[in-house]
Image (cartoon, helix red, strand yellow):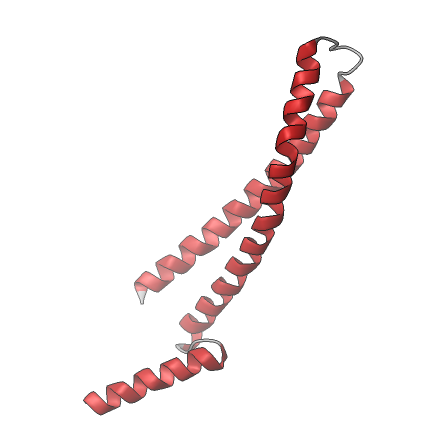
Length: 112
């Protein structure tokens, strides 16, 4: 049982870290783009344009990553809740998990 608790703690910590990372990434990337745009009247050489092109190049990847990891966050939240429910009650959540638990208990009874 202690392995499950440690796994639950690790999943919870990872989800929190993922959420914080994604928040920071989105916020800092938007800030960087805005800051770069604000320098358009001051920074006028080719490197300004090249930096903007680099930002434009990575924007779709960052957007895709942030969208994909929203699904990961939701999946982790559901997984954490199912594990927490299992630890609190000793039963899996949902009919499928309950059926699996019943079969296991039945199998144990046969071998006893």
